[in-house]
Amino acid sequence: MNEKEKDLKNVIGTIFSTNKKLSRGYNEYNIDSIWRSTFGEMISQYTSQVRFHKGELTVYITSAALKQELSLNKQTIIDKLNKILKYKKINSLRIC
Image (tube, rainbow, N blue to C red; front, side, top):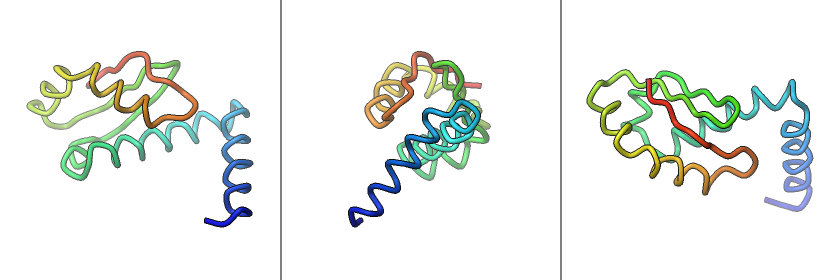
């Protein structure tokens, strides 16, 4: 990535992170893509929705067994995602 691309990426990221109307959609997309890339194809197949609002991440899982497994590892998941996120931080995780 060259300098112009990096500058443009930073400007766009700043606009989306500071404008409230734009940031909500950007953050939702960003967190959804981070969730799917972090936990891979297998978990992504069973993830129907990922929502983030006021520090709470809500993940909708279609498999009961996977829901149980993720619920047992909530703090590990929060820690892992917070290391990747740049702006918003996850305070709590809800598995639905």
